[in-house]
Image 1 (cartoon, rainbow, N blue to C red):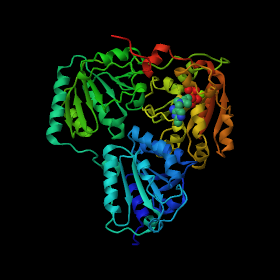
Image 2 (tube, rainbow, N blue to C red):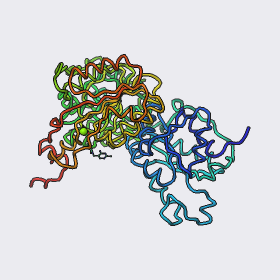
Image 3 (cartoon, protein in one colour):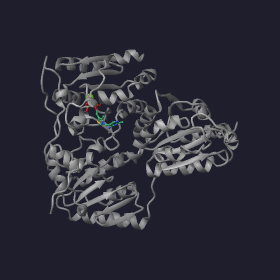
Image 4 (cartoon, rainbow, N blue to C red):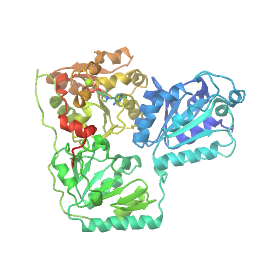
Length: 559
Ligand SMILES: Cc1ncc(C[n+]2csc(CCOP(=O)(O)OP(=O)(O)O)c2C)c(N)n1
Ligand SMILES: [Mg+2]
């Protein structure tokens, strides 16, 4: 058999994780990678509209499949992708970012090349791109076998992106050494425990739970990143304690399980009673390790007593001031499942219900009339993507029906992620539909990915919330700034302009129009793209004291 090139070997090895698509934009320094992506069996190119979109799409794909491939070219390409890869780092999504660079023959002769700034510092971009990764490597024919194993192990262990540079020359050179054949992601043990620490951690958690009178749980997205959704559900069922999610963790658990009580978000919890259940719990099991960023903590109105918290993170457990290290999250959950006593006390909570249907007929659409109707469209197997903007304030508290997943970017919050990540989620999902809700401003950042969606024949259901402004900014600033006004686009015409075939496209401004189009979507075997007119006046500033508390700009009171 012909020896594979370094680029072919790299892509073959990475695809063995269960990755069948590579997102990116080609470029001359990356041709070896680009060609390999075309030739490696089982791998398909997804040529995106730009590198930022490609990075968001890879992020979306990895959230479903567990890992993704992204390729960009030297300098101009990789720098454009950094925002998206940094979002993957924040949300603990393993994206392998492969970049081509000028060949060693150019480097050794000190030749000046394009995509640099007119000097011969070829390594300028390596630290910049590496900053968005937990591990990086420059692959050569002689180090690629070893280095690739290190990079894969570390990216999966930490569940974070990896940055891999392959020069054009190295990429086309035959690899040296014995190729490794890897296992699919689901079969890989990602974290390893030190048995004594693990045993002590599990013992301490059990002791705390045994004494607890009113325990509760918060589940975070990290559990899903490590493929532990099923174990979390099993554990919740066994301990039978009220469980909430925070905004950035939307989709971490099935919201139809009897233990689910709603959204914990400090003073903005929904239903409001969730705040009391979580904050007054004598033991709070924090499964995954909540990140108390302000948007995940009710604009810093959270009140979680660290003494009463048990945080199970990817490789450590913290119980008050006790810390156990090298405790793999899967081992901790398995140990708890095996040993924890089944609790039979009923979960007492306010029933979380479907949102009430508001408005009818010719009534102008509003958020209260739109979201309940969207909620009723979602079915088991569907995924809802939540873009940053006012839509997330409606979608995060909205209870999802059984079997409906959700993804959002509630920590990194980069506008435009929703539209482009839809491409990746759709291509990664093997069944079920993908719904995406975006504001018009966010959509304008990445809407050129619609053409790519049409090209690859995916069938998302997209709602563009058209209020003609960067609405959420009005929540945090005074209304009426010129910088919050948007160019007014005929969004519903875009699928056609972008060459999408068989897309159901419409503009809806009344309840009747919305209901009509939702009925059509139900019967339509194809993508749907709906421009939803929502009045600008819905965006209103938050009370001044809430904003002051959030921004912490005011001088603190004396005493
Ligand atoms: C890349 C990026 N640029 C700017 C921002 C700041 N930002 C946060 S929300 C927002 C407005 C969102 O407006 P839109 O998408 O129209 O949603 P709306 O709130 O109007 O529903 C802006 C500009 C951001 N989060 N990300
Ligand atoms: Mg808007």
